[in-house]
Length: 166
Length: 166
DNA sequence: TCCATTTATCTTGACGTCAAGATATTTGTA
DNA sequence: TACAAATATCTTGACGTCAAGATAAATGGA
Image (cartoon, rainbow over all chains, first blue to last red):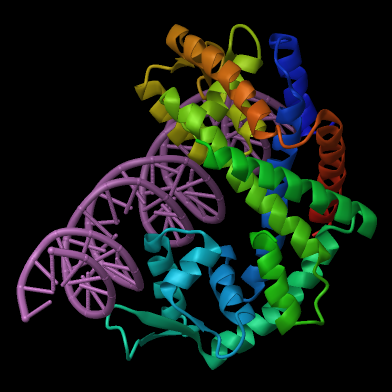
């Protein structure tokens, strides 16, 4: 009987007409995302980051040398708005972890580049982050994790399908 | 090959040392939570609500007659801070959907009560919300949904366990 | 070539959230 | 009874986010 079960029990008592299986699944998914988010923030914080700044640095790092992308490319990968990205980049630049370099060929454009300090920081942070993810998911064995990942992927595809029909 | 797969492929190329199964699972969980959140907001918005105000009204509704809880009880159910709850209640009160009634027995305390308008609004909104949840999860059959819910619950318990050891 | 359109980025204002702390009241114990 | 501790709620200041729009530059068709 977890917190989600308690909520479902209340609804079942008050509104026996409702179909609650989707709510169970959606509620647990949300709680899990919150709990995992909290568990991951601890590692980010230990490196002076938060999930927003980690997200940007990690995107640059995994893009490969020379660890540089435009704000538009970062927006596509991270799925945030342009205003959010400007704000994230301002803070990372103030921390000396990225540089904005003006494009030589397009005066509207900028490339965002990891500094040496930024590369060193994210490189160590990612290793710890992945180890932390391993720790956080240790409640399921590898087969269960793979099955969970498969079902999440299938549902995600279905939701994005439903979304595109709106 | 979804967005999460593309991210994993980049990491696999750049950092073949990393164990990526937990990242796959955690990434899909997060994307799914975002996509479901967006899909659910549409119904809330159609009733003049957002997920924050829906959360409070639904908690009051499912608590049963007389549809009244203290701010502290609402904080426990919704897992937000007291400042967040004060802000939510201020807005709902301004919309005429809840009332704050001073306790007769404890001058520090208040009960938050659904108004008639608040009850009517949440009653219809919940019905549509549950139908919408059903639509959003239609990509999985009932067996798959139950299995997904089970695995999410098991992992959630494990994460909260790991959390409590920090 | 010109200019409307598109593209790339940044700015503004509002919102929801949190952590920390303020205020007022009640409780428990000496 | 008196008063320290606990409790209930609200306030403040900062942050991350978004939607809408501003600015500047590049593009492409007449």
